[in-house]
Amino acid sequence: MERVKKLPGYEILGRIAEGGMASVWLARQLSLDRQVAIKMLSPDFVQDAEARQRFHLEAQAAARLNHPGIVQVYDAGEHEGSIYMVMEYVDGCSVADLLDRKSRLSERHALLIAEGIALALDYAWSEADLIHCDVKPENVLVAQDGAVKLTDLGLARLIGTYAAPDMIEGTPHYASPEQVRGELDLDCRTDIYSLGAMLYHLVTGSTPFGDSQGLLAMKRQLNDYLPDPSDLNHSITPGLAWLIEKMMVKDRTQRYATWSEVLSDIARVQADERPAGTPPTAGQSTVMRSEERTWSGARPATPPAEAASPPPQPVAAPPEEPKAAPAAGHIKVARAKQRITLPKGLRQQVAARFSPPSGRDLSREVVSLVLMLLAVLTSYGALAFYHLFHEQKTSADGQYWSGKAEPGSAAQMAAGLAARAPDPP
Image (cartoon, rainbow, N blue to C red; front, side):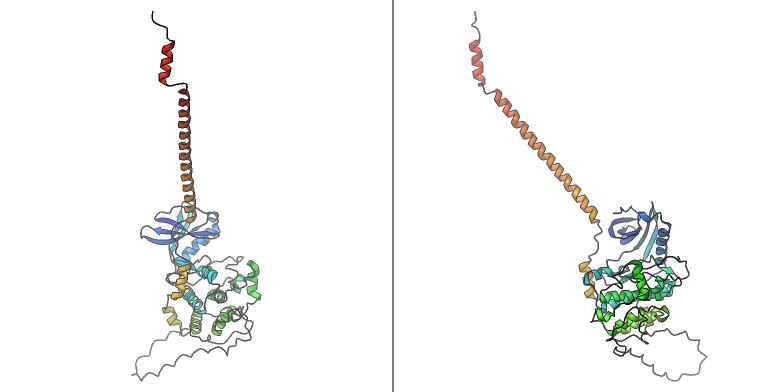
């Protein structure tokens, strides 16, 4: 296990997690007396120029964003050869941890998580032209208060920045087809596909193309198909199955074009309606469509109520040129609703199964305890040996002097000596 070095201004309390390129530690920021998470680049990659650059880009990307659904970055730097990033500490667990315990989530909970991530990614795209490029359950955290937060912007890309043409980025099971093809002009539709793949995993309990790994799983995103989520989980509504199918259309030009459209359809599915618009053509999506699921069988979206005609107004100066209306009717509500809080039932499961870290490195404590027990046992053994040796020595001395006195008492010895003495003249 990597042994973390001390950082000025922080008290390292213990390790939270460790990955291939970095480890995350729980610490206390002394100046503000608050808990933070410190992500440290592994010593094996400190001399790797590409790894260092990606680590710094992650810190810079996260620092550009200030949203309750995105883990905040407070500081970053280098100290005595350690490259680190100080982040907001989320007291909870990842969605991947929830899946490990529950296998799959209810439709209600899965949609709330998807909504929270969609809001965060909508903010990142609209405010900073940023795409995440690695949306997956491991990168979504759920706090014990129910807050949903997106983390790990290690692959995030600013539109217009350089990307290596020979590198395929993303996690194979959630990567979009355009990522697999190595296209450089990615946009928010890439994250929409990945969120659809994650939503598929949440409600079915089945990782997309989970029976394949690496390059093979990526190739299947291009040419293969997933079973209808309704066939794997009969409790989900047809509207949710249609939503996932639309999000995972292989051709991005036929996919959702904006997060506004996604958020609007999430709201419709939450209201037990089907998504707006028309369904994808059969075979366009990575998600297959069973014969039982039909577009006409889903509850249609409620059309927006027409506004009443306004009363006549006096003639006035010509109004200003109106701004273009948003593509979806729910966008104003969605953008105003920045924080997603999961219901009490799921929060209790998070708290019960994944208690907050104690701030202690248990492995080191176990080693210290073992060493302390060994020291106690050694001291006790030495003390017992001393007492045993002392008792044996005392006993041997007693037997020695006892043997010297056995021929007779002192009085008898004196009498014998007197008897043998010559008579005086």
